[in-house]
Length: 525
Image (cartoon, rainbow, N blue to C red; front, side, top):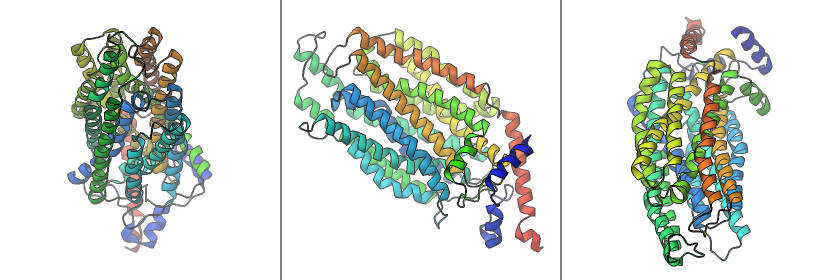
């Protein structure tokens, strides 16, 4: 069955083995076999892990705070905010696969094939991230404000695609064997969860107190905690806007530092089935072949549902704490608790997946958050209960950080073994993976904001009607739980288990030995 599938896809490509050609032209640049490679040094793992920080620093700040920023600080209508969030992520539907294709077709330069994309996109990404949190003059019309934030959001997402697609593809070219690659992925996920903690913590601590002040000021203007205010004092609103600019400046600086660490600490290492050359397939042929690989499609579908569930709860969490749970000044502390637990849970889940397997870790990890979501929606005005439940949710969140990026290389290796003539498509695989994660985030924010629009949400109300509270509760638990159950159902059919992973490792080593035997140096001797 494996031979038949590999021959069928090879007939589609009509490619020659680019690795052999590269070795013939310059034996010194030929990819090293698995047994001939030195182990991954610790400093390379750490520098590689630090390079993933910008995606989480900015992504989680946007995930937790962009929605409430557009509605309560910029004071856009929910309809316009939902359009910005959804259309921005829809733009990723074009940029992520397009960037992945362009990266796969780009030549290998002196400093590598992937790293030049990362370095070149960084200054533009920082610039547009800063402008995304900038509030134009209140004299601008609503349509111009809408266009401003939509344009800044799309520009930033494009720059982040140019950074994160090649960065995530770099996993396949760090050197070392399958176990060391999984170890590097665990380092990366640990740093990314820590980056989530740092990004959300910085953003939350800087802006959270200003949001609480806005809520208290709104209530004080009406002389009662149950009244509906019609305006907010200008100085309080301006202070909140300035706090968002300060947070953007701090996170943008960390973005630049992480890129520099990656550039100076990591060198690309071509693999036995990944020579880091130019892909020769046309865009749609590459797309058809990749999406025809069954393990990859199951992995995409499973984590699309799980990511949609988590990001739906994440995007609505600040609103839920402020307007439904009666904890308006504490949501930033709850976010910190969740992320601290997620950070310390990464090594535990890494041990668990090595001991019991990746599929088992997925089922156990995703199921933990279900009772936590149920309790969160049923309890109000109780910080201690919320703190315990978000700690449980943080333990589950670390699984979503670690497992997708740990399982994806297995699917890519399986594809390369079945289709040995389809070379240099790693960036394509990772670009679609990144796209589906971003698409889930945009879809979740768009759905939640549009739901609030139809429920009658207004940023100028201090206390919201029963329909808004009901919408918040439904978005916080029932819908995410249904998506998590769907995700676990999909993973029941995922074909790469621990037995298949061992077969992949053995086949990769055999392929490496054949490549070593067939190399020009072997022929000369």
